[in-house]
Image (cartoon, rainbow, N blue to C red; front, side, top):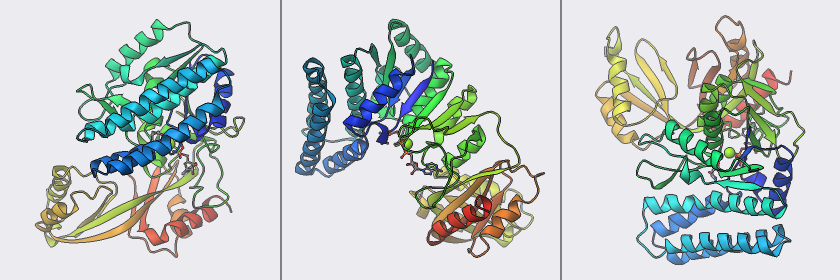
Length: 438
Ligand code: ADP
Ligand code: ASP
Ligand code: MG
């Protein structure tokens, strides 16, 4: 069995849902993980924002707009009245549930309940559509098996036991449909795996059932060698090692959620990135072995802040770095990049919630300077230190760009530079020109 995940664009309209239905019925008995229709989760976030601000009319306006969109989608989807009515009733139930939240004191718990409705709608629509086409579809309710612990980590034993039981109970299914993104927390309340987390759901499910493959179907033919939103003439990378894919996802390649690689990697399950709009394209295969000796791709991570701590006391002082790191740890802030010299250390963070407090505490160790609006540009490939020349290639390509930090050696797969956000696009383009188009 395989796990096939379809993102928001892939199920973004009645026609797209029908296309996916055709695509999945041709591929046999697999588990299909669906995102919400594109735009829906954003609308649900907006509804929640209005409710947090007690703007009930504003929330109603967005709910009404969304409701009409779903009504139109259903009319377009179904020829069969029986299944049209079944789908309509389900969607009505979901909108009634959303409306119920406009009447009570809004809380974070209710917000998570609202955010979960997008995936519940898309999966129900797909399920009834498949039934209307004579396909024996079975819905696997993610809220009955997907659970995270108090650190937000998947509870693998619980997920495996509950998912297996659900699969066993419906072993005559021709196709299984389930929700990405949504789960329960240790209190049993509805929660989620963070925005874009349906990829993670698919990988967790794949790992738990020992799937033959996890397929992430989206609107592009695989992981490109640079961000197609900013660089022209990017090309799909046919093969990536798990580590390379994880670095690219973490450093901004939006096609893959950063957490998605780990469960599949730990269970050695290949992940394939495929294009719903062009199903025959090869896409990208992420697995254990890959072409060596090559730079594969470039990605960028925005909204980075760098902090430099300069201290004459650092000279030969052991324990200095420990004290720096403790400050970040106490403030629950992860460090991305780090470079050190005899007199100072520079680090980058993307979570600036506790920046002021961190700055105050670091000031006790030395002079602190901060650069905001920075971007990490990450070059990924087989970059073992024994492979000569790739550092020169990267730095040569961007010799006209002011570079704030350079980091290499943390892994065999990544060399990163920190630049100002105004130089991001130029840096990405120069890297593509010099690394891939020559
Ligand atoms: P989905 O809704 O299917 O989860 P996403 O929008 O999350 O899809 O991811 C697909 C998008 O990722 C593409 O449309 C593309 O614009 C963007 N993207 C960013 N970097 C890359 C890259 N290196 N390769 C491919 N796509 C990328
Ligand atoms: N629907 C969720 C989001 O928009 C999850 C996902 O699409 O992966 O973030
Ligand atoms: Mg996505």
